[in-house]
Image (cartoon, rainbow, N blue to C red; front, side, top):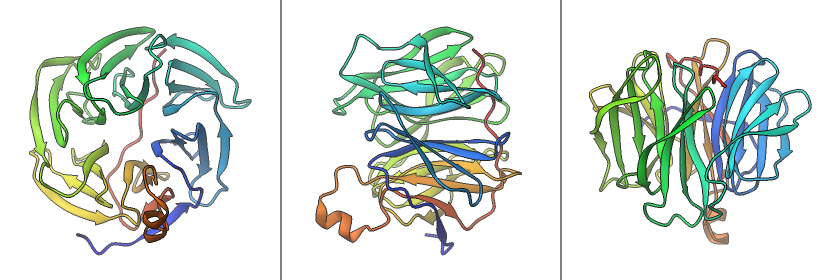
Length: 292
């Protein structure tokens, strides 16, 4: 485990902090408390945390343009007005299934959006991974339990995800122009038998995949060939998802959670649910805008 430190980026405590996404245009990090039905935002590096109540469980957000964002919710994709916060349904997704919600999702370099869904009670194989592009939705993978680690190489030729089998990260070749997978997924990393679970990931400009370890309290960095390069401690056991931040995407934040903890566990993990800025520099990159 690396000896690097971390500071608290936001002290706002989330039951299930997730889905961080940085908008370089406004120099703002957005993230969610999924179960708390909240969208949070904070200007980098030292703005105040603003909390927006949501009428649904939201899990991911992407920039459309300077005035609009796309929010992934439990029943569909909503366009959000960045000035007023007004939400308008754009495309329904599993709206007829009250047992599921969206989870980990990320924009491909082409502007398409991979969106994961799962059972609210985490029932096995009840979710899926979808592809959204310019209003069209296709189901890519079925029988997904908890979709996580959805991320892409900078060139858009490789996608990563987990959820078919716990603690296995898969990789699949992609069409760089559309973000659609080519061929069958292959095993990238097998973390079975290691403390914790694979959660959210991002890929930097060098092809290194940075994975948050749920119940492992760390961020693991994997080379493009699957080798573990380093592990960096996160000050909360339930670390959930990283994002590159800053004017040159050279810093990395990690969200966390306290979901499922009893009073004793929360007392033993006092920073649980906060969002952290790691004391390292990375060769990060900004997320592309999503194309509606």
